[in-house]
Image 1 (cartoon, rainbow, N blue to C red):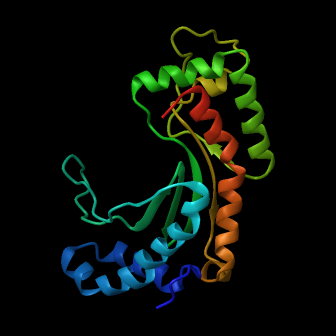
Image 2: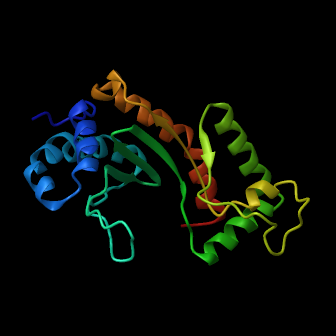
Length: 208
């Protein structure tokens, strides 16, 4: 088996497509060798290639935490990993690469909004967001307040950022032949490099 990352084969996407239709332990155990060979091993190889430049790698467990979920399906239909402050996810729909902060606790959210409102850090974030959007990145939040955050004015120049409950930027790639080649690494590296100003801003002004 290759020891260097050479992309994710179509077998990985087929595995997750089939898992969505047969999300149970018996099916997964029967096809676990495909998951290990086509999904987990390439993600490990990708992490090894990225870690020296972007930071430590942690591959997420495929098992879902169903304790408080209405959906009791035992497995996630994707494989994902964090690489330093970055996030990579592969599913039947393709590849996502991005970074940012997702659903912070209330104290962190307050620091985040304070940094957005501040005279130096706030305009800097606005410029980073504008640059990323101009380059074609999706800059979004999982949830937005309908009203004005407590302590801020509705006419604040960065009110749309202040309404966000978190902030992340990235790019989704639909299935394509390059995903199964070594060239996939270059595209992933480009995204992580382009979103780095956002992660640096967050580390400097909000902390982790």
